[in-house]
Image 1 (cartoon, rainbow, N blue to C red):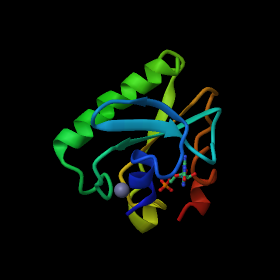
Image 2: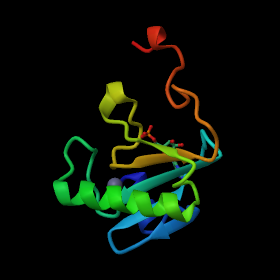
Image 3: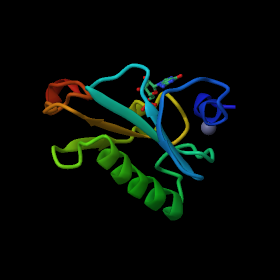
Image 4: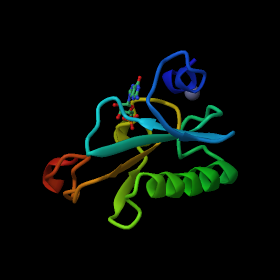
Length: 118
Ligand code: 5GP
Ligand code: ZN
């Protein structure tokens, strides 16, 4: 079972910020911004690339809710999802990174210099 499925089942502890029957939001263990939350469907699905429309719709609306809860919906934020090897996906369970709480630099989450990015 993947680590995010274990987090859903509370077999690995996490710092939860919000959840409903289908989705869960918790703090990233290695934050890259003052607010860095991972948002996942509770049912395992590998990535954005293979997720169905209902999952993506629900996950996106849930992400809006979490941004409001964290008080960053007015100041702005960034949503990222990494897909596969070239996308830098480390955990093969669909997740959105919600980043905010500061003015994010372009490339804050990836390498800064576009010339060096590929
Ligand atoms: P990816 O590279 O797959 O897009 O992102 C995986 C994210 O999961 C990383 O930002 C990493 O810090 C986070 N992460 C990995 N293991 C754990 C964990 O056990 N708990 C939490 N809260 N975050 C984790
Ligand atoms: Zn999983």
